[in-house]
Length: 70
Length: 136
Image 1 (cartoon, rainbow over the protein chains, first blue to last red):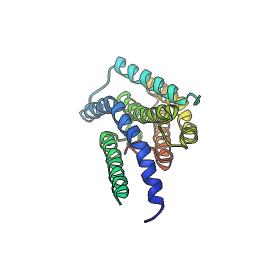
Image 2 (image 1 turned 90 degrees about the horizontal axis):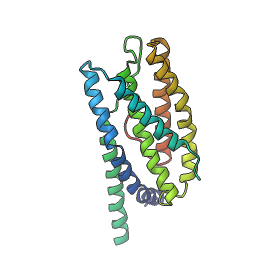
Image 3 (image 1 turned 180 degrees about the horizontal axis):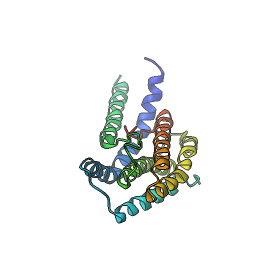
Image 4 (image 1 turned 45 degrees about the vertical axis):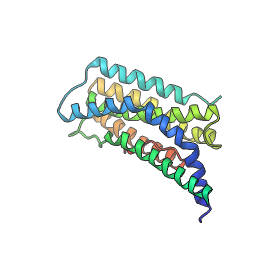
């Protein structure tokens, strides 16, 4: 067996719970995106309030991730 | 032998986890913008949500790293990914301004730069073992 497979298995073992958690954490965002895609395809628009909320949420998440690791 | 079977099963489950994440993100489509395909507020919202979902995945990875439950290279990996994510903020601010003022010439340029940056960030994350989904 290729020894690299063990590295892959180790990485898979480590990342599985992270991927599951990540899948849960982005579910709402993805659902929102899917509904926007439908609206866009139908020629719909977005309200200023909704756009402002999307901007604020993204700013908050990006700022959080960009902080240095302590 | 039993140990190998358990490891193989775990790998399969892990890959299934990746597949689920890919399925969740299948709705993303960051089509190239152009004068004929302008950056409307709803299009800006779509790219911001797509980027936000990727950042949420990265946040989860970072939290796991801080908690000590991620891989041993996670600190270096996060540092490498942050090199991309720190470029996003000024570009997003520019995009918002151009969309608000309906400056389509510049909005299209920045939108396409952001799409490209997202693709590069996704590739970098994938090479480090972190899946950011199937958005382009």
